[in-house]
Length: 74
Image (cartoon, rainbow, N blue to C red; front, side):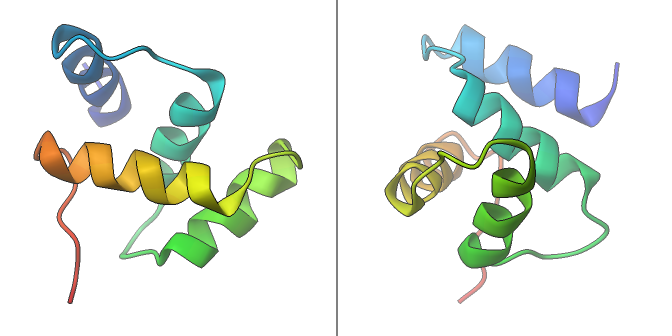
């Protein structure tokens, strides 16, 4: 099972909806070879889905952090 598939399953199992925006954000995170800023994630997702807003990225990153699926850098 790929890292992306595992993260999607973890999100579903925790009772959260898998929106297209969340799926695209997870995809960008899993495809990266390193750490990405929220702005970089937004830029990459907007290449595929130009209607994503910045607050959706921050909300998704907050959720993924609370579920221990990503670790923020400070």
